[in-house]
Image 1 (cartoon, rainbow, N blue to C red):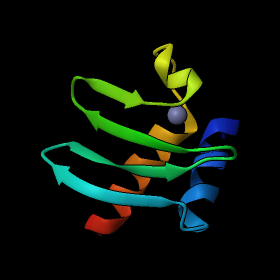
Image 2 (image 1 turned 180 degrees about the vertical axis):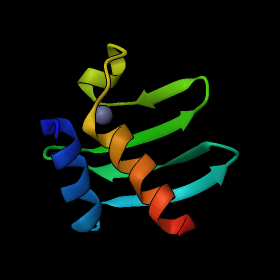
Image 3 (image 1 turned 135 degrees about the vertical axis):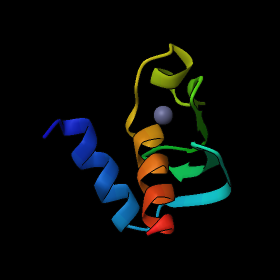
Length: 75
Ligand SMILES: [Zn+2]
């Protein structure tokens, strides 16, 4: 498993992900990161996160964590 996935799972388990909105294959929320709270969204068009990696359009653990939290909530 990739490091980024392990970190994302840990953030969900620690309750650091707050889902504020969910839609069709999409969602939005906030994630308490190590140094800041990030605004995160995902949709079929892609992922958006206000962290450094997200601002450079790289996949970050926060976006994965939000997707996991939304997926868990649907179970
Ligand atoms: Zn991020």
